Image (cartoon, rainbow, N blue to C red):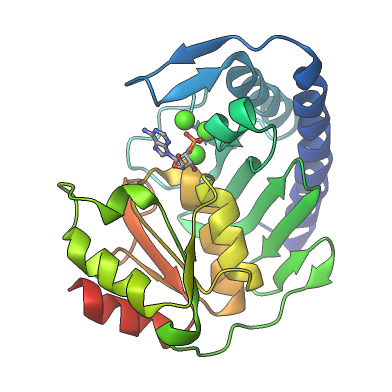
Length: 264
Ligand code: 2AM
Ligand code: CA
Ligand code: CA
Ligand code: CA
């Protein structure tokens, strides 16, 4: 797409996100309808669904040839085909936080063309923090350019990790995760993958690792991270596949290798 088209998409994306964020804030006054997806800790609310539909309606009206991949399934059948322009949307990332805390949840939108990340946006709704990146033009927090990330060692790092992975589980050797945490300066867990990826991009976290994310969890984050020079791979060191589920290790240069050496 041309730069003109990209600028038009950016303008709409930011406007719609702020409108959606207001809908989410307004919803705090209402009673949420909460249902379970795969299990009792996998929650979805009526707001997850209505925000996804809100974006899809706007996109179909304004950019009819664009496709949408959304967590709640109201978008298009993508089936591994990354051709064309695809909006990868998580209407609420951190639904459990949305329900329990009314904080630490985000709207996450990554826009890709033929599999290349063009625009990435993560909006921390309660904190009103807008993380935005445009391919080749850098990443911004509330309009202020984020500096490129510098090398750091694990012993001087704060690492984002979900406590689930510290106990025995079938996805990774939990002792390797324990070693990383012991060696680090500290660990944090925020319950929103999108926010945690935005924190790595903005330097609030030095690294974030997680064992299973879907495209809508990381699509925007990858674009932000790329613009600030973060290193991103799966936890086995292999490249992340955009349209598949992946483990994710995102970290500052140097630290990524040090963590990977513990993991494999
Ligand atoms: P979600 O809130 O959009 O579902 C912490 O739970 C983080 O992991 C959130 O970013 C959450 O996204 C994501 N996540 C991915 N798969 C999940 C699942 N099956 N159950 C709960 N959270 C999941
Ligand atoms: Ca979910
Ligand atoms: Ca999510
Ligand atoms: Ca979600």
